[in-house]
Amino acid sequence: LHFPVQHLLPAAFPLLHPQSGGYFPSVNHHPGACPLRAGLRIHEYLYFQVLSPGDIRYIFTATPAKDFGGVFNTRYDQIHLVPADPPEACGELNNGVFIQDQIALVERGGCSFLSKTRVIQEHGGRAVIIADNAYDNDSFYIEMIQDSTRRTADIPALFLLGRDGYMIRRSLEQHGLPWAVISIPVNVTSIPTYEMMQPPWTFW
Image (cartoon, rainbow, N blue to C red):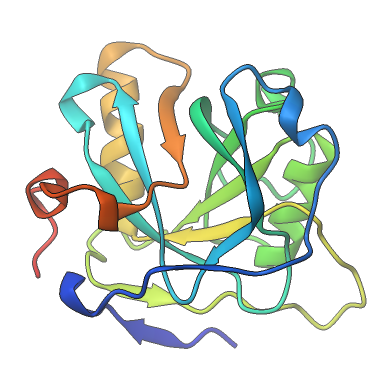
């Protein structure tokens, strides 16, 4: 079951809280990686910023999976966000070679959140961002929980609003780009202009 969680106002967002565990292999070897002192997981929200393409250079809000997946022990100043092909990522990927050591953008549907996370992990992805398949969803987050199997996943898994995922993919298609460049995770409490850097289609 997936339970919608009402999006809170930015003023109510918690700070980054250190939490141990969830290390994933070779994380510090990425050229854009900065090691963190401890694994960071937002109490409810985690933020990333699109650096390229410039027309979607905004800070996006995502929610970590509730009871599976790893945590971000590293801040990636620049890493690729690669839309999976096929988008639902329920099996073998046509562009798996581009996802290795990068982060995958996946679409909800077709299989469980955990299955998608495992597919991306098996292709060498550092993390997976799963966007809702309801493209008009700009305010409700889905709580991602384990399926009925005993399987596990080690990489971080995040849920993204359907409108945000759609706008990122649309921008990449318009520019003919195979991926976006992002920074993740972003500590928004250190950015005075955070509110002005949110996507204009998101209503608070």
